Image 1 (cartoon, one colour):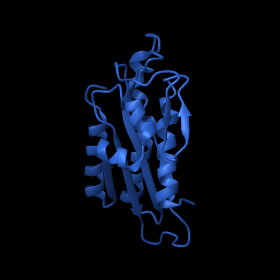
Image 2 (spheres, helix red, strand yellow):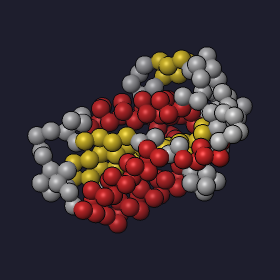
Image 3 (tube, one colour):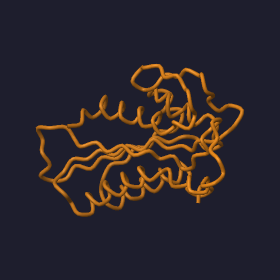
Image 4 (tube, helix red, strand yellow):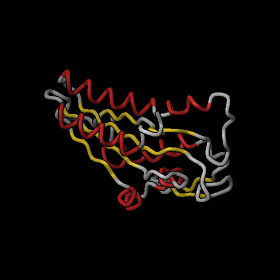
Length: 179
């Protein structure tokens, strides 16, 4: 449930998996996210009681192609999605604990590649937060700056996935030049 599966929980899971199966895991806390310019992730996180985490995993298998960049997998880790100020209706709101399915798929891909010792080079990135309502939450009409340096006007705060994914994609391109 969302009261257990928080960004810190996802980060701890990734760290433990990396140690057990031999791949690198780096977790950026909110201060480091700010230094890195992960403004879209931090904007979504403003309404949360839990600090955001940006999880970076890298697996380099023996025999992985060396003349090309890694394959990058970016999965959104929204641990619960209320819709923010553009709040969702209550009909299926309890299902929004599953809004981190992309993160789960990314974690699974990295761990499976490492466990199977596949000859691949993978980078997995999971920007993680919940999308909650608070006095500090982003509001429709706010303008934020994402990792790529582009400004983004918020029209609907329930577009949090696109925001956090934009930071994840930009970070992957800048730091890993994926193929």
